[in-house]
Image 1 (cartoon, rainbow over the protein chains, first blue to last red):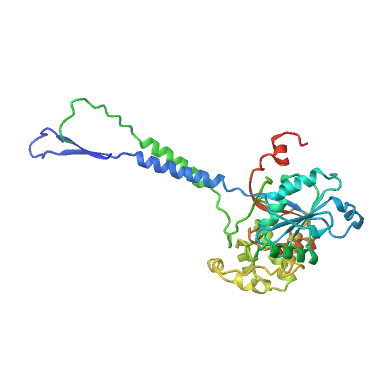
Image 2 (cartoon, each protein chain N blue to C red):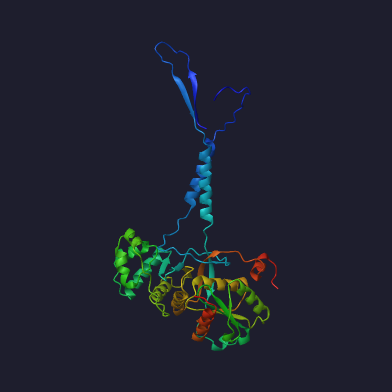
Length: 176
Length: 217
């Protein structure tokens, strides 16, 4: 640690000169180096770790070919509904009454299962968030599309009947 | 110290001054290399995704939505901001003066209805930051006032490729997002980028296999 050394009184220089005790100070710089490197590490991490990335979202054009839109076979459709409290529900084909509850982890298995058993030409995932779902749910489902390499998917408005069914399932499952 | 030790102690005292100089030099480099984020009026926690597309820094028109559904608009190019302020002043009869337009070019982002636009710009910059901006009204699927902002941005950048960015909070309710998307759709814009944090592809999934270079089944 820091110390002050007394190098002893010098020899007598001459008459009238008092003995001058030379004091030398040594400061131990080690803690300052530690601090310096700590601050460097902090700045390294704060500059490189905060890069946001982006996710492309392409929405289909509205009007255009009506025929193209309904070419997809109804049986190849997999519909995902998003409700409140991170609720995920799905049904296959056109039959909305067969609505099943799921969550963000299990929905991946369901998508994979449906994808495997359907012709790639006909497989489409239709995503319908209701007014109580949030942005994070929407991005999570869109992310699942990328993760499972689902080529055809659509983000559409939920119909009133489906919304009723969803709310009914929510109350049946006791979600407030 | 009491008593002298019999064994002669060799002291290993290293002069640390050089180390300190080097460490402060490196520190200064990193401090100067940090690019400060443009000040945002709202803190937005955005979700993560496996998408690794780069965040475009230029020619970007960013719509920020916070968790209460307040919509803010940001553009990186000051010249573009100037032009859009002038256009909006004409088309919406805002009566912006040269001073107001200058204030807008320096403002980081805007989130007020057109009615309050002029009064916000008339305030000095530090007062502007303190104002709790209510957000651009986007009440329904016509896109509200955001429609006009986007329309003007399109004509400002006429011809050049614009990156349309949407940054929304995790807890933003879907209806607000839908209205924002409608504002874009009414302007014939169908391709945007959502700002997300990067997250690795979960192990074993189709995407993970592609990224590993294993051909997908």
